[in-house]
Image 1 (cartoon, rainbow, N blue to C red):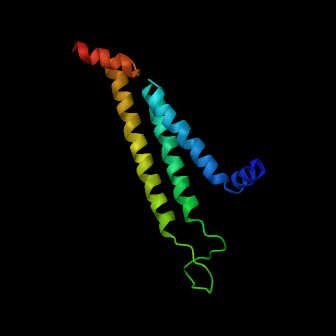
Image 2 (image 1 turned 90 degrees about the horizontal axis):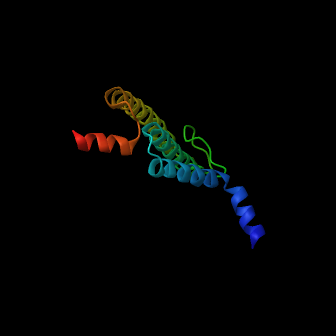
Image 3 (image 1 turned 180 degrees about the vertical axis):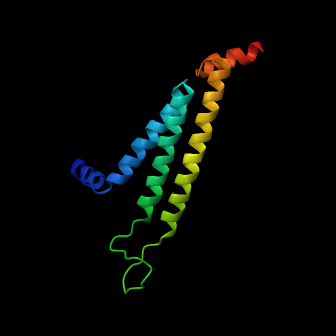
Length: 122
């Protein structure tokens, strides 16, 4: 049984990497108090989702749909969606970092618990 599990994990290494990145990203978002580390966690989480889309779109023996063939055709739509999501993710990260810089210049800290205490005192 362990040999079968090892063989399944070895053949589906993209899914293993996907769940590792997903877990690390989710942990960083939930467990860290630092806002920059939370943004890094969100970025890792997004990367895991991108990997999920690409891994699900893989077709064994698939060919490009540009010239139809007598075989299985791979859809280009998941790659287009991932490219669009990457651009949106970069924009989201840039806006998040700009907000973090503004928060640091205003309050002098990036710890979420300290920011809540400061905001409660105002």
